[in-house]
Length: 426
Image (cartoon, rainbow, N blue to C red; front, top):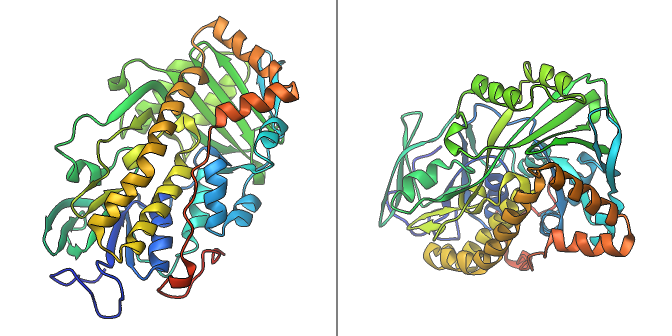
């Protein structure tokens, strides 16, 4: 990274104000924001605390706002090629016999066919490839301290280096370091929803069920699997946990022990799956939580994606909202010619009401994702049976999926920078 000038304003070689933007986080939100800022003549730089690109990750569904925004990015076809088309969801009993199922055609009918699934890491890679080689990215790097003044932000990085930027954006997820530093005076922000989710992938698992999302549930817990390309299989665990403090952080061994303790003794394929857990290299575990903030911006700092308004892991829309937030924020900065105060106000004004509604719906969904009683499981099976009736299924699916955000148009006629288009993904 190059040392920024001591004052804000216009810079040689740039035709926007406050062009140098440091984005912390190279998952989905960060590269998404860099994609649009680069188009509009800004100079984004990415840092990522992980030592390398994060592989693996759970499967996410792309529909509604997610489908619309990926299309706006010009990456819909690439995403569909790298994604998956599941034919049905199937719940099984302890012996692997089907207890309920639902065909994916119900959701495709409700969404006009605009629906597919993709691993989170594949979506992140698809977005990053549009800026690869044109936006600096430093892995293994985080922010140690920050100081704002009238001319910009001075940042000390974990590498020991000090740099100045005009703006800082925290796109660093649920456990955002930027949020911790820049919003220290704000009240408790995390709303824990009472569940833990964990995932991993493995090679050569013998049970495949191509094109089927298979789940086995007991009261308060559920494990699912789905077949991936290249002989790989992915697994997702979800289980209830009342005490947020019982969730081990930064301790993979303790996290795996917790998963084993919750699922040991269960039937179906659970013993085989837990045996694969021991050697999984991409194991991931986190709380099912929302982030609800009274503000998403502070001075020259803004938050985007899960760092600002995580809907929860179970909502299946966090990636979509990360892309959406990046798009709306970049549009606001572009329209305001880099006047960050005006742009930040517009960003919050446009997006906050939508996100408030989406988070409320996600909280309701989380409570029904893994029923806590045998009766609850039976009710879920009955609902899935009812949804196989076309009229009822379409109506219920639309209620479950909610509405889409009306996307503002990208101003392609005045986009500045390297001349890249939104469809420049490789």
